[in-house]
Image (cartoon, rainbow, N blue to C red; front, side, top):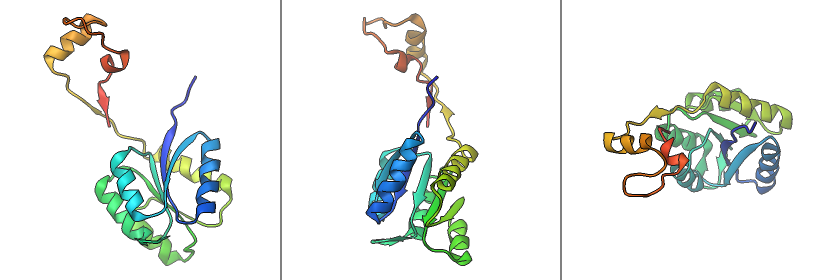
Length: 164
């Protein structure tokens, strides 16, 4: 049985850390999209659907806290986790108060990192909503794989009743 691959947006300006974390998460069957700036994160968050945002605190074009607030405005349901070298309790508290659900201090054991990622995704699963299918289209979908004009409808299209 194939399991669904969860999609993580990881924003980290340190290239070696970004590559290592991406490799480790990919080995655990996560799909990871990366960026190194707030601009990257904003663009990617608008272009794709993610199961988790993972952020560094210090980025070349601003703070991870500011990014966290922007992402939270964009989508209040996707969990946000900081993976940061900012180790003070005040840093963690500021992140949580800005909308993050998790905070892990670098360096961290990679098994602990994966466990936190898994836990947050499980705690905040994607929410799906039903889409009302127009009656005309609905009758075509029930009729079979060919619509009345002779076009074949893919099984994906016939079964597309959910959207994010």
